[in-house]
Amino acid sequence: MPTETVYGLAGLALNEDALARIFAAKDRPTFDPLIVHVARPEGWLSGERFDWLAFLAESKLVDVARLDSRAKERVQALTSLWPGPLTLVLPKQSAVPDLATSGLPTVAIRAPRHPVAQSLLRAVDQPLAAPSANRFGRISPTSAADVRAELGDRIELILDGGSCEIGLESTVVQVAENGDVTLLRPGAVDRDTIERLIGAAVVMPTERTSSESQQAQPSPGLLASHYAPVKPLFLLPAPAANLSQDQFAAVRKLLGNHSGVGVLLYSGEPTTAWTKLTPLVTDAPRMSLIVRSLSSLGDANEAARNLFRKLRELDAHPAVQIILAEPPPDEIGLGHAIADRLRRASGGNSGS
Ligand code: TXA
Ligand code: MG
Image (cartoon, rainbow, N blue to C red):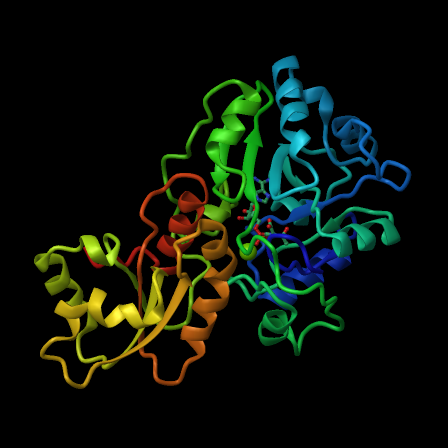
């Protein structure tokens, strides 16, 4: 199923067999819970205000009684962004199978704004669990062709809704029973927007959890290594123009004997890579650079949209042995989400 963020592998959220098939197709460990997708019922398509919280209670998804008044207010404020790229983690009702939530007392819910996702949800008239349609730990798909490459031999149907408008997975935010709001995964809805809506500071999770652990994670989306290419990826410690001689020397060491280097620039035309990385390629006559740029003008929306596709291209390129990625110039707005995904793709490998 296409969504505005990434493609999802959809199954009936309240049906255990469907959920089990999602985990099997993805090779996903059952400690990683799914996101449940919903749409406003027909008849609510126009501008009228919709009471999402009442709808989630009636749909047997959210246990609203466990939310105090401050929590309810904040959920109401945050659902003003629905449909859109925001997932809310809320207390669950018992009708939601443990398999969907990995036994957690909470359930993650999102109302996608992609018209095909909405049509599908209205057609089945039930919530759909949908993790990103990639094999576990791999790069999320942003086109139907990506889904085919990831899962083509394991699923029966792909709804082609074109390439994803945002290209990064949704922002995941937990609203606790007492109203505390935690940002579990950065995305297109940024921290400032959330804080403005709730009129308070959000809590940032402090610790990254280890993928070694088999227990349900506070948010498995926080696994340090996730969204990773198959080939080793190193994240440059700063945009290429700001790298010191020492930093270049450290990166050069990291490259070892590899001569086919994939370079993922954040900005600039691909041809600028040789100039940007001069200290790296000087005295390395055998080194070849295979370059992609996320956005020639450094536009964050364009960079986000291109990130996973260009990572996939470098990962699949036969001449590329190792990938160097340039971070965005700052971690404001989408820059935060892009830097987050690059760090995870690097599995903690940094050229610093
Ligand atoms: O944009 C998206 O969110 C896409 C599209 C398809 O909607 N879906 C997606 O799903 O990215 P997935 O399964 O790849 O990521 C879901 C994230 C996981 O990191 C999961 O741990 C977190 O949401 N999550 C789900 N339920 C949770 C819960 N009860 N508590 C904390 N985190 C939860
Ligand atoms: Mg995923």
